[in-house]
Image (cartoon, rainbow, N blue to C red; front, side, top):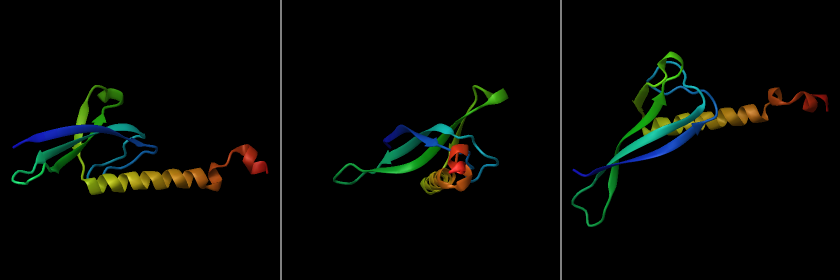
Length: 104
């Protein structure tokens, strides 16, 4: 079986919860690892995603530790959508106005 892995980065503007795990992860840039396998028997090359991992680096007394947390594409899209909505809500809320804007 032929497999391949690709790496990319995803950035969260706000703390977020990953479905299936307790607590929140801090805002920041996280590495994504996607593993795919080659579909055999086709007349063209095609790949199927078999797993996606969010790489979480330790903080505080866990500096240096790394956890590869499995995440589905659906859960990843959900977390990213929530982050975007939260950012837009904060950006456009009246509570986000600066003191100078409040005086006008």
